[in-house]
Image (cartoon, rainbow, N blue to C red):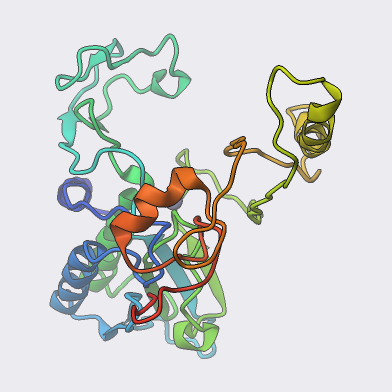
Length: 316
Ligand SMILES: [Zn+2]
């Protein structure tokens, strides 16, 4: 069995590190702070005596647990977890360990309004007596996917300490930038060198997902004719009609869909009356100018909506 105390201590130490990714960055990893955990994992894997411990220029941590099985041609299996956590929430979580959970409400001390109640959170039911770990109320915990990272590291430690447990070669991979949809972008399958791979990044114990959600993102700009709200409603009709035609696929999506039906999900909808030429010659929305100016490195392909750069500046 994996040493559960080792697992807990690893998890707590990993979640304390701020490793949020950034969808606006074009580098890989998208944030410098992910390197802190990447280097820590490299050090820990070396300390455990693993073979072929390597960090790629894009921040993928790779290592091999050698086979203990005397059989030949045992397939190489890989285990993955991502080091980044979701952007957009406050960082630097303070993990709280609740040993022997009493089955009641959990009050999070840093924000009295945050109460984890089994009446509204079914996942808490049946967990009485177990050890739970929560954030303190003002941040995400980052269990996605520090839990996966900690489990793999605790499993590696177990395999190293128990060579009598027979297995084939195991490839470990920790990757950056999963939360922004770029988790596998900068690693070749040949670098991984495994026949099958499992990602430890799920919800419930014992759950195995054999298919995954797949999505693309689209930015749609509808150019209409500016009109005063007091004008005739016909002058509004084109903009509204186009807007509705994009909305309909989203309406069709819902819990009654068959599992593999395509769906559309609107993330953001903005209406502007005017657009204006920016200094770079692109018609960026006026509302986006402050962010664009602050970065001072030219327009980026996303989310600004143009791919030009200011002469004399280097685009990243
Ligand atoms: Zn995840």
